[in-house]
Image (cartoon, rainbow, N blue to C red; front, side, top):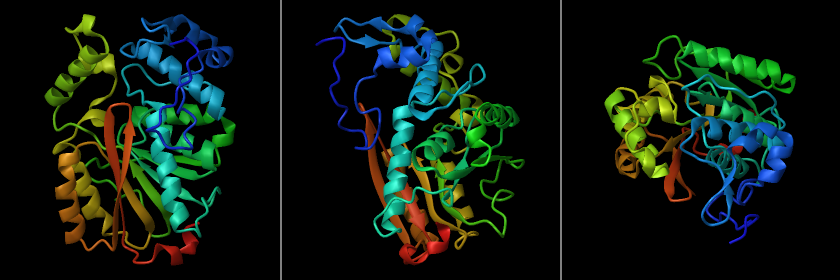
Length: 316
């Protein structure tokens, strides 16, 4: 296999720009600092050490700069650094969902307004949704430092100023309360919920992930910090299922203000409980969109309280 092998990652969305192997020559030409982290693996392929947070963050900077015209993207040390190909997939599948309610055409307009629950310090979903489809966003988070860092990213990229706004959730036990006002109309919500139910569970998972990425570093002194992610990003009481259940119950208070509620679901075993809760709250439409990246499988669960989303043109 040659170093410039461009074999396709067929499990990513067809419109995903990252279906092929990373073009490191192109990425380094726009982000020279990436060169320090690129090496040739035993198969003769250019790559980076994905267990190295600095390498992953620099790769993200290069991808955002090269393909999405985002300059000076930075996140604070020890905050979650998202895999851009997978995050882009979520955005593309949302676009397909919206096309179903828009005469089969993806609405590429700033009138589409998304609500990003837990935008983190990286603000990746609003950045990608705006860059790819020209959508507008409100990004929320309970962490003040995350909101402050997102503000810096927006200020460094003036084109985002009119497209992305931020709001801190001051009551962490709520998701939509304090955020959705009576005047708001969101075309969709998007969320990558906290995965774990405790800090201990998050520690074990991060240590396992580091071991898988770099077998030589099996005993990490601080796996959560090495992998990246603050407490609110990685875990919450009740874990993923607790967070999503809360989200579903809260969504019933805004049935006419959001066309599509959506959330990432990492654990397949949580689907049964999620479906039961959605049935209990009388969601009119429920769909599950399967996603995969490499060996990791996940899915997006979407629901609406409109029996006919096609008739709700005011959300576009």
